[in-house]
Image (cartoon, rainbow, N blue to C red; front, side, top):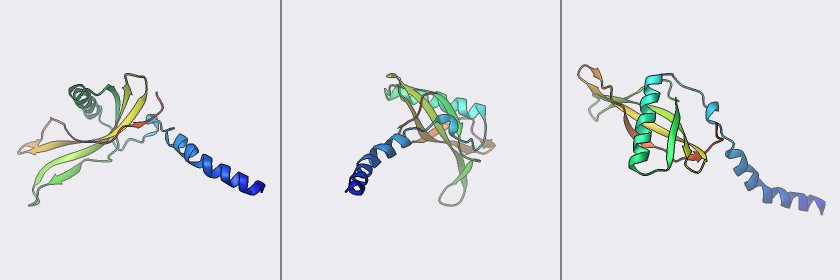
Length: 132
């Protein structure tokens, strides 16, 4: 009988324990794929402008590039039209909670090289992280 009670308690507590473990993520644990302070600064500027425009109650404070290198973007005919890179951005909500989201940015290819302008093309869902 004791075995059944213990098994029942484990089954009841498992979802709670798993959810708690998932929320113990730390932004500082993310390994950078490459480093470029200028790109990270531009990503933060763009993310904060977007947050203001969409009235999100967050402020992005840190960015880490997780791509090891730029990924080339080709059109349907195989011509180079740009490149993209993935970053994780850390933000703080106005209520004090801390979150993180995956962003994808691109740069267009011009005749003389890549544009200096970074463009946000994808924003992932925010999820809870420990505040740092």
